Length: 399
Length: 223
Image 1: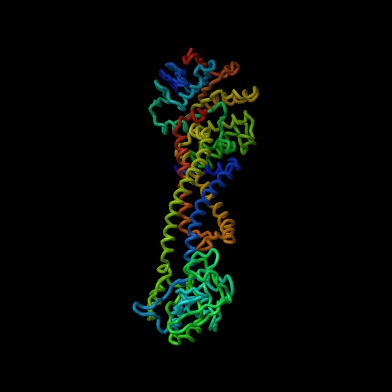
Image 2 (image 1 turned 60 degrees about the horizontal axis):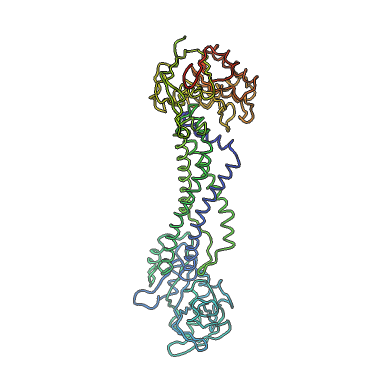
């Protein structure tokens, strides 16, 4: 029995070793294409979701953020709070943002947008707005009458919310901020475009400018955005809460809002597309392996005629199919990570909300590799089992 | 006649082809003794190969019984028939029926690997290939061998599990005269020296002299 169990492996190895190389490599290529098709679609959707999430984190909230306690307008003791947060392992940046209580005007247009006062150096550690300037430059710490505005505020051609914007404000032009009782003129120093509509509906001035106008805001903030790296503890929210800061702590996901629903929708679509992809891969793989085994019908008949038991023959083809699957997955993985992923990193999918690259989670990769394995094994099993059930002479004589 | 090693009792076989029933064998009864060298002859379509297939347990008759070594075989499961073929019967096809991906020695050792270790099977296969005159061709693929050499590999394979009976279906039909004679001499040696029962289908008159007994079929009956 022990010797018999080695026979399927021996047969499968000889089929691979001495079978037609062209057929083997063509089968392998088809398997790898089927696998790439599965992981490509999945990683594209994951890339869009990941890109959107990164937009929220990098332009809006950071990985975590602190807001005032219920019933309060501000987080008090801003400086102390920032110092405390900085002591937590894994925190790589923090930025206190203070809502500027003013309406903004440009020529004869007036409106309420979110205007935030920031420490420009801190902000650069938390958000990427400084890197998204489409005209002009980012603020310097001591800019007292300069402002940067988002693309949705500046307006112009192809701006999504142009109707509610300044309809084409440009760098160097003046805007006014009207506070309770006084007005201050600011020069547009830069216009930024993050591709995230909500983020581009904001304007920034320096905290120095706000403090000069309203000294009482010197040590308060309306939000503290926190950026972390991989070394941060999973329970970092509890750690921040334990610091005794005057505010509530949230993760970025709680600020995702509509994008959370969009991400969920993408996940559902991804699941559906993946099922269809697996079905297509299953049919393709089944046909490839079925044709291969049907062509060996005579050989299977001969093996049975000389006394090789059916289960050994079936098992040998199952092993062969599994080898095709493993080799196809390996080849597909190499092609995917060595060619396709780098290509899309260099040339991302340009979407209205983000530039998406391919992102493949370990779980998705394993699930799809497993799907290819199972489909291949079944594709080897069924035709081999059917062929071993036909009459020996019919198989050999091709009847 | 020597003690029967195979008996056929009223075996019949009908094929259905193109909507027509073809009665290939009609109530055939025969007994073959251990150590016989039987040649089954007859015209094309007389039922020679069909009879051989039934006796070698490659096919099942519609009625009747095939008894091998006093064992009734018709109602045996396919698994047991396969065991029987593996350990007691050797079969040689007209078209050699070698596995294209295996070398001569690998083809021969394959049935032996069902019963013993690959090391022992390989040793046995090498001895048998030497015995049929393929000393230097153990590692050739079937495509690298002549028709006569391929048939010798098939003979070696049929012998590897030391069967008591060898069935051969027109084993020389695709060979030239010299190769055909070589094959027949191998059969003669196996029969005379090793006492193996040979049952062979042929329609070459010059081969009949090798047989100890002839069975002539005509229209599915022994004539």
